[in-house]
Structure formats: C-alpha cells, structure tokens
Length: 292
Image (cartoon, rainbow, N blue to C red; front, side, top):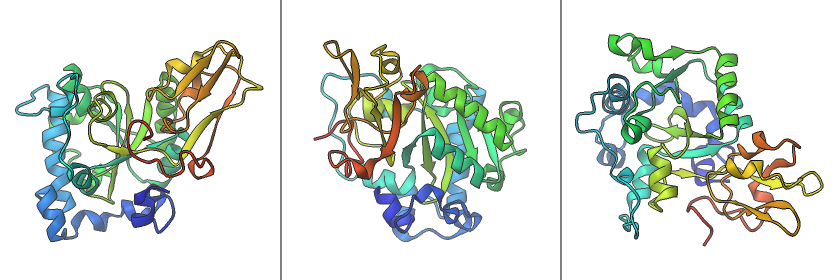
C-alpha cells in the first residue's frame, strides 16, 4: 500500500478512513514543522487561503498573482526540482489516483459534496467556471455563503447526482484523484486531464510528483480484447501498447497509474482492475511517471 496508507491509514486505504475527514482536524494547532511548510497555524487557515487564492479566481476570472510555475509550457530538459519539494507537497497538498469504484466509496462516506470551478483549468486555459472539482466538507470551512460572487458557480450535490457526474467524467477519460489540505485531512476529488496543473507538471513535463498512483492496476483479458484500440485514446499515462501481430492491446504495469478510465471505452469489457500488490513488477511503484 502507499505511504499514506501506512502513516495515515494504519495499513488500510487512507482515503477510506473517516478520521481523515473529521472536522477536528480543521481546527487543531499544526505542528511546528507543518506550520513552517504551509505557513498557517491551522488547516482552516490554510483552507481559507486556498479558497481565496485558487478557487475565487477560477470563478471571477481575476487572477492577480495566481500562477503555476510548472505549467508554463514544455521544455526540452525539465528542470531538476529541489530534493525536498515532494516531501513538502506530501505535507501540504498531495493526491492519489482513484478508480471510479473507490471514488464512489468516498462519496458514500462524506456528508457534504460541492461541485465547484477548477483553479487549474483557469490557470492553464483561462476559462472560468469549469466545474471539475468536488469539494468535500467545504461547508465546514465557512466559505459557503461568504462569497456572493461564487454562489452561482457552486453546486451542493446529493450523493447519487455526484456519482452520475463522476461516471460521465470517467467516460470522457478524466482520471480521478483525491487530495489533502495539510495531510491527512481530505479536501476534495479532482477529475484531471492535460489541463490539470498537477498532471502537466508531473506527468507531461516530468517534474516532481504531485500524487501517488492508485492502489490498483489495469489489465487486459486477451480472450476478450479484439484490438479495436478504443481504450488507448483514454490512457493519460502512456501505459498502453498495441501489437499488430497479435491484434491486442497490452498495458505495462510499470507505467499504469490504475485510474481505470480505459475500461469505459472498451466495448467488450476486456479491461479489469487488480490490486497493485498482486503484480510484483509494480507492487512498490507509487511515484514517478514511468518505472525506473
């Protein structure tokens, strides 16, 4: 299991532990080392700053100084990030890829789901009100109703409606991920593609990791695969390969992030998930955009 499961889940999936959604985490005093990294005394202080600097611009279109250095565009030689940048991200704001089944389990656990505009999309495309983010428990932050200009862009969803929208995103090929706001507190679920700043900086540009791979891998049943290649257009991690001689698709477990969205495009249900721990080649591969 990933590092967060060991540290914040006692050996179980960290994102399925209710303690990591508890309101008490919002108000507790952060440790000295956490304060130094996140520049806030509590998670609530961090969350409100995140809202004002990252979410409000995506709603109003007024960016101020908001920018994401790693999304400036591809470079021939990606810069080598500082050695401690991933460690700091794990403390402040880090994610993990989830297949749709795990997303649904999270939705069933939480009491508050708010669909809201994506800050990344505003930074990378300039478009406002692109509602790809699902805030979990943001009513506890005290921001709902506090910003009149945001009211029309926020949708408080029932569980089944949230699941319906997330399944639509799955079919579109958007990979799902869950995120912390000063770990281990869970703040939301994102639905990402090339327009996501974390994806661009990490996967497309080869920068420092922003998220763990999923606890699962995808595999192809060659008895069911017809070689139509429909699934290949969905993979955002370069994990799928086609054999013209065999007329079959192969998924490299060392490259697969386990998002599972390729399954939605397969007309023959030839792709399934299996626990990462069952595949020795990838059992301990959690970070990096390719094995090695």
